[in-house]
Amino acid sequence: MSTVVKDILVRKSLIVNAPVEHVFEIFTRHHDAWWPRAHHIGERADFTAILEPRVGGRWFERGDDGSECNWGRVLAWEPPHRLVVSWDISADWKYDPTLATEVEVRFIAESDERTRVELEHRKLERYADKAEMMRAIFDSPEAWIRTLQAMAKVAEEKPR
Image (cartoon, rainbow, N blue to C red; front, side, top):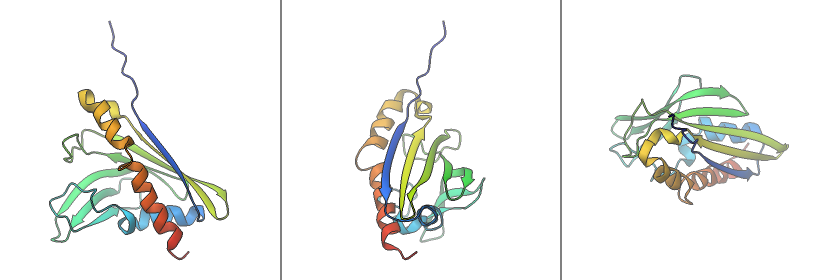
């Protein structure tokens, strides 16, 4: 008898009042300008959030003392419309390169000055018995939607 594994994921979406190219640029190349300071797993509370802009690039934090803590890696880089990164952070909030959940972010131009950002965090079933707990965390108002709102605020305020 085989066990069917249910796909567990979280989807979030919001509108940003800025052009798609600008929103992609803020999300990727200006990652540290908006990444919430409470969302880190490294030892240092003062850190820089870095997303290397290429397939295979690292997604990580660099502490103010130069220490580094990986979060994942870039799996797809399709400016200005799509980005996929691995989320290699365990339920214990430690880096685990064997976990490899995925975060896909799509940037959809609704007009010249309006972009819909769609985020899907998938493969959460890889958390096994903690999958539903992690889904609830990522789906909470303090997680992905607040993170996207922080990015949107910077994208709407930063000069184009």
